[in-house]
Image 1 (cartoon, rainbow, N blue to C red):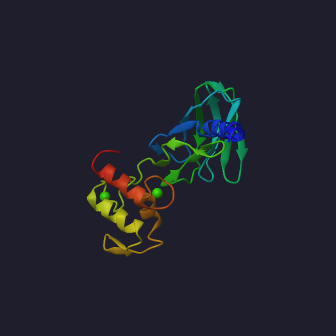
Image 2 (cartoon, protein in one colour):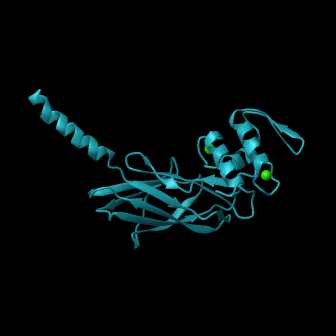
Image 3 (cartoon, helix red, strand yellow):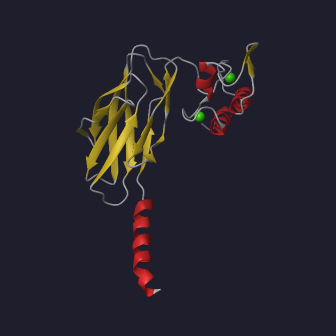
Length: 209
Ligand SMILES: [Ca+2]
Ligand SMILES: [Ca+2]
């Protein structure tokens, strides 16, 4: 039993290190302009005193990063074309590490687009994920009447469980519906339309988002 003590202690110690995770939040503007540019901010809370952290952001196809500041200093991320992503390696990161990057939007962009990212190895970056075209449809306004209310919640719920929806006397059916409907219903820009999106539409309809 005594002989087991040391390995068990080692295991618990390394497990504690594994679970001491970094976390990150993305801040995006609400809207973009095709052929325009905007700044996005990543705030990473660094756990412990690592030698370095690696932060990767995945951008919509055709969108690019034209410059970035890491803790206020210009820094060029490593670009990977497939998937369209940018990677920063920050050596001896401060406890709160900030990455501000400038995004160039392609001319043909329209509708909603989503961002995602990770802190190595696979910690997802939270915060804002979706950005929409300025003057475009409202996220969550599935029937396109200009507001997000209980009708949209019901439509989102029906889409999330694959039921047909009728909007403006046109019936749309699973799984295709229409691109605009799915884009407006996919509130968090990930994993298609599911119960998480229904909750987000509900929250928006009562002014909580
Ligand atoms: Ca609506
Ligand atoms: Ca979703």
